[in-house]
Length: 444
Image (cartoon, rainbow, N blue to C red; front, side, top):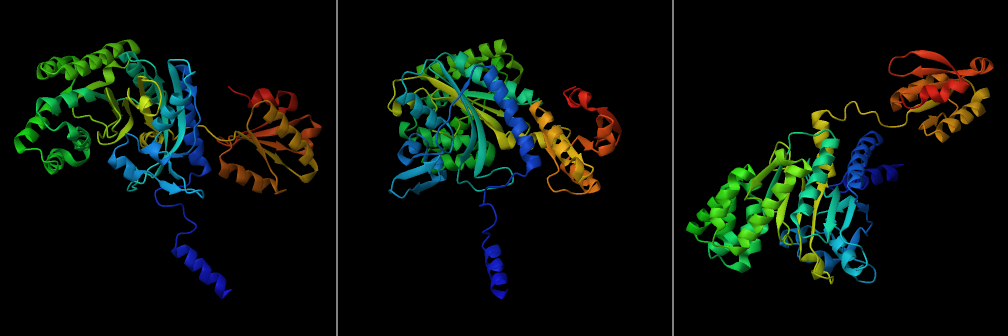
């Protein structure tokens, strides 16, 4: 006994029986709500014609590193298998998609795929940031026109609206505009990605923080100030695009980026998300592979996005495929669920098993099983007592589980050709003939 107690203390001290740091368990009532959110997102994805694609949770380490950026590479979960192969857990879905497209040239274009599932990043965990989290992605491969960028934004907007969210903003920019700023200020081109990573931290570390990052890169104070002035353009696209054109008039690269943004703005009216659009030249996105329009959706706190993405026209070729344009967006499931909970959207959500079949005595247990099976086969989610408990204990259990209806099977009611149905919300009980039970419990 002393040994057992010692082991328990050791295990508790070492957190052996707790989820690893940065991960968590989701109990049934939490999973029902997560699944409801994921199902609504999937329905919108499929309504737009996107197809599911399944890929491994771990991939080649070398493949994952391609164009990811130093910050992301440090966050990838890296390991070697028993054959000493270098592998890593996926940190997002794009790399796997590019590998599939590069190796399956027979896929018809445009290839519109979605993927929903867990990804892993070794970040500093917090209440709103886990190391294992779910992303829901849509991507369009094979379309260079801004209509594709507009569509993936539209998918995300419609998914959020389907979940009951409003009042969010879609920030847009183009990486070529940021590259043009580097060009116009005659900054070293080899520092472009480092500069973009610094700018991407603006909402987290502020202007002074970004200037310190730029200073570390050796950028002179005057040019740092000019760059911060250039990216300090945000507002309604129609009101600010002319101003941006004036800044970029001597940069062919920047004007191409501006043209793409104008295309996204034009299509946004046709797709119906124009009121949500906001031009923001400080938006950079942290991944190195973006080549055109980038976008981010946030609700309230601008430092926390609930969806983000952009265009990556050169990535598939890097994975051994043909030169292929591509764009996509990713929704953060955990952040969306947390936002819905904060807003109370999920409070009255009716999810979970609908009906519990209780046996008034062991003599009617076989009939209770028969009734439960009949309900299940009719598409009504149903549970029943498996432990032979008293009726009061069964009702107590049903109340704790949150069943909406309890079918009480008793010998007296069966003799009359029916059962008693209790509404667990109101406490009302009614005798229901067996031939009417499906109609009574079915969808209303």
